[in-house]
Picture: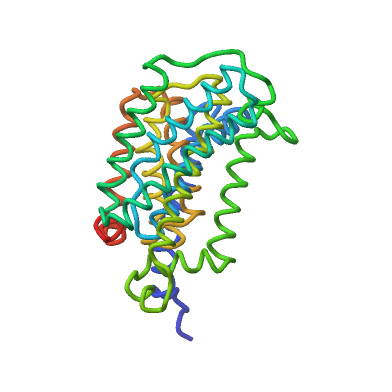
Length: 323
């Protein structure tokens, strides 16, 4: 009887779909062995809290990318929404209205991105960079470059600092946004149309889909995610500044790019974005525990972006330059 061999044709698709996820597990095991206190419950919860803002921003960016558009304004829009929320709370405005204002700023600038891309036919790479500059200028205009800090109502700060069933509120927000986005994409007609539009714009147009409207919706949702992340960031820090979300730009994009190498290779997807965000957060945390210099994390982040973009280059090119 001939020995039974594992068919390479079965192994290759498995590695292509889940290879990066396996690498993330291997990295987790490495840090669990090499880094003292890495497996401590408080440390793991800290990683989850730390990546929550990145994951929410990454999910918004993913929705735009699924529609074959790039949103490079989300970090600046997040900062503007944060200072808007912070200033209103600081001046004694009812916290609920301040929260709605912050999310509204995000949605408004996302809508602006969509209209510039679809009506003015400016490639999203250029359009969102221009909108980012506008948002950045407005954030400095609102604050005069000064951070807004204060003792704010606990009803507001609990959005970012509270706990539900001993689980940090930020983790619940991240899970809720992820599940909502995943359900919309996989179980609704709107999500199906978004995916179809991103896969082939011309085919979607010939099929009668409202392509422009779908792209506007995707970019608006990306802005809305930035607004929500801004509210949570402001609540958790009890402060707001014109540059507070700047560091999230590359990190969130790297999480999405890394996610595009797993589960649905070459395509932005919600599970991949979450795993990508956790991998990046775990990498930074593990390097700190190992005593590595702070700049090593930036070097690793750059390598992650280069490697993941190389795998998903065609999707990114289409998103950056298609009109």
